[in-house]
Image (tube, rainbow, N blue to C red; front, side):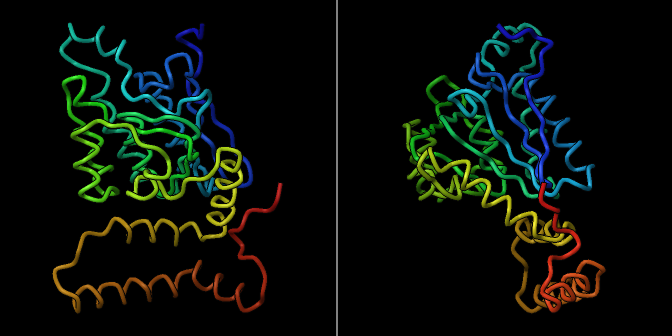
Length: 262
């Protein structure tokens, strides 16, 4: 059995991509306090490292993430606090990460694990993976994860899946917007690699700016919004990255920020 002091998140970096691997298969990669603390630390380090251009959330074992660590939760009842209270910090860190985050989902995800998938910018799952919002079946609700999940799911699908708690597969997860793509399990790593290869070709500042656009609330008026966005666009074209990107395109060469092959 894994000792409590052993790391529960493995970190590796290659070709501009940091992979944070949930490594607690004995409890189905449940979101314990230790695992969430290590995940936050890994994200913080990836953001601070200029050589890192994208982040992948992966897992060991057959399960991506089973949600809250219910054993730890039950033990904490006496104190009046539960580890799930930390989940909000984790989801916010993934959602707000200025670098693209890709979720690699090779197996089942439940509850808080679905919040992680929804927080990622891109999520690729095996078609064989299963998903379920099982909270109502244990007397709770999917409250915290709704901050990310409801920004992804089609409203009718959200009502169906939240209220019934029924299990659904990777193909449906793609149809309702929970994941970007569902692929055969044998093709999962290749699909994630293709996304990462595309992401690292983006300029770091432009990627962060594009993520801000994706998080942008609806404007109050079209003309006012267009004027603001035109100013924003001009700033990017005149930036050092913008000038280098245009020059590299004209010279038919990789831009300076594209990582060299390992």
